[in-house]
Length: 356
Image 1 (cartoon, helix red, strand yellow):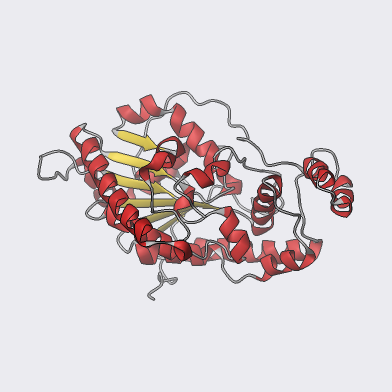
Image 2 (tube, rainbow, N blue to C red):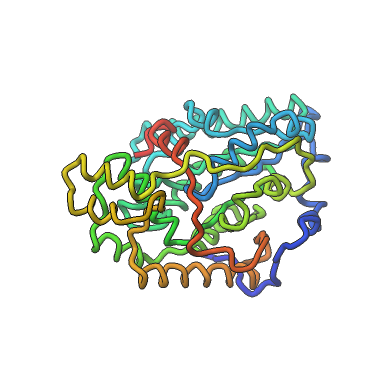
């Protein structure tokens, strides 16, 4: 499998204006027309990831619909994608039946029809935000892999985007907090607290964000990829709209950024564990300070996970490939940040089309 080249010049972005350097390619939707004479809608695909500010970003986009419309942009978030639009495209690849495969093919056809409808309405670009296209938290934890099914999943939805310009955005997050946030969600949903062996396996699992990014690039070899760190942009998501679109986008007044449905703190998980009869686990969690985030990893594990993340950031800053733009807003903004993303949309995983 051909991977993205890692020896390309760095695409480090400080002033946002540098994002439009490739404007001839990124604004193709302004000129290209289809057989009907309508604009060919380009796709801005936001893939999450889970627990990286996706819900807050989707809430912000939803509130900016009038401004997006004026800029020639449409937005589809979970309220649209999780109503059957992606049936057959988000189920666990290991559990696919012939009917699931047929449903997925029909969903790709339905997506193409919807894209044509947008073209006829004069829409230039569509922001489609759905993190479950790359996997689910349950599958991450059960397989002990960071989106290990990503390639198989995206390969199924790929035909829907054929013939269109494609820009793909994904946020990454420090591994200690990313895994802790996923675990907190799963515990609240009914899973047991992780054992020491479970945590060791998460620390040593081999997949990194650079693997996720490279896999996306392999499935979509003509797409432009935009990558940003959760820690640097969660409090200021507005510029990410322009980064996804590949051109300036004038937004309306912004509400003050806030945590969207924050994951349960350690004290809340302690109460849940006690109610389930796990008194030892409840006691361990009860010692956390009031309001503290859930952090199951010990100091050595946290150090290892943060070092792995630092290596990812260094790879991105050095130039992760000719098609990858890394949005680097600040220095050393990762590791130990007290930021959590909520589960408002995560709890809808099962409604996307039987993801399990």
